[in-house]
Image 1 (cartoon, rainbow, N blue to C red):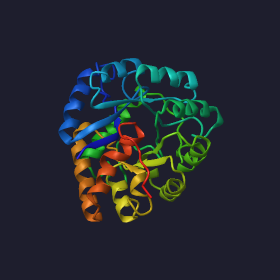
Image 2 (tube, rainbow, N blue to C red; image 1 turned 180 degrees about the vertical axis):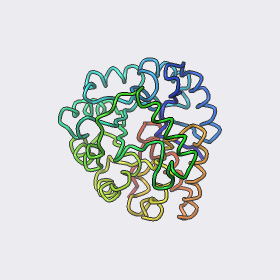
Image 3 (cartoon, rainbow, N blue to C red; image 1 turned 45 degrees about the vertical axis):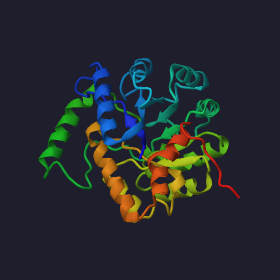
Image 4 (tube, helix red, strand yellow; image 1 turned 90 degrees about the vertical axis):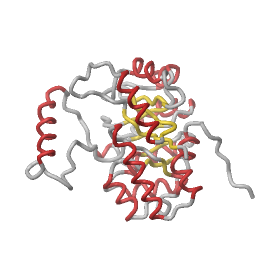
Length: 293
């Protein structure tokens, strides 16, 4: 079965951020293909890998596997900049850590351009995760967590403090955007993220152009199953797969979802939609079709 992964971050050596990223993409292509990924959106730009021009130059070497998606800063990226990114070869946009809410009027020209150009927009939802999940571990009792905390503290001075809050990245903002741009293909990441599931299910239920990716790790996967988010609160046609992890963990993510689908008793047609067709329709690799009378 073909797998479309909508949420792959451009790999980066955070210890040596100026290192040539091309070999990392070569390895990502090998690892992702071995895991079963047949198409993958690679999120590129800003803090996520090299600049847009260098990033798409590298990704062009893998046209059958990777779909370039530009991470943008909407305070600086408007209609003209989106058009330039599309001309470079980018086929989608990603937003995260914005300075104002996603439905800020000043951001709308960028969305209008994406709608016109057929570029899906992936929005991070809710709290941005960090290196340590304090719900399951803590540096006071876990040596690996302690090492991670030391590493994160040592690297703190390399990056400026960011003005970030989850209140600007709510699924409710997608409702505004979806109604203003009914042909814009909208993806909310992480099923809306913890604390936002009810908002996410409500938006997905009534806005035809809003889907959610199921990335975010084991906690969100557990919630997706326990709360009936897959196929009950959010319809099968409204979900896409995203790994959003280190490249060496992609196969494990796929295996966990296969186990979830087994426990949910999903049909082959439902699995095919979740693994491939929904995302392929968003990005134009499959033609959507309505049911016959």
